Length: 94
Image (cartoon, rainbow, N blue to C red; front, side, top):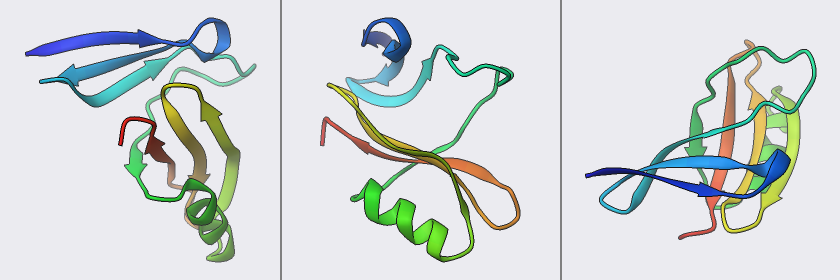
């Protein structure tokens, strides 16, 4: 059964889509100026800091440094050398 759970307040407010109690997607309010509405794919990783650095070392770009979100997890936004943008994510629920 699909469900939605809300976490955070203000600029850190997120909605998590769940299936059988497991997060399968999410949405957050846009807080950065001049950023149009968009979708970003999240890739689950064991160490957001290390994989963000590795992305940069391999020629990618860090669009947003790692950020801890209480009760949600940690994520960064990066792009590969061709400009493909995605997020690296470590859930607080693992």
